[in-house]
Length: 151
Image (tube, rainbow, N blue to C red):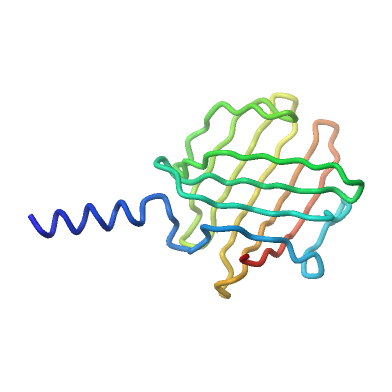
């Protein structure tokens, strides 16, 4: 009975939190990031929070021209496609753990555009890397490698 209780408490404490320690708030280090095919951001904050069915991943960014955008999504981390609707994309999204340090998020829009985000926990505990590839319906492609630091 005690073993069962300890197992339940451990599951509740760690539920939804990746073993990679990525939960929390992360801020971009623009000096260590690359923006191939696009302009750098004035600011980018990523938040990763526990959720009963996985985790909530939120990106808040301010473009160099001052426009602010934000998106937040539940990552189920099971690789199953789910309906998704955002101001710039209606289609499907799937997310999965590629390994103990990497999460893959793929969005496929009905318009033909798509986005792939690889989120990697660095060997350094205070660093997170986002590799973002976006392709619009007209074929334009953006590749970004963003280094974020834990706040």
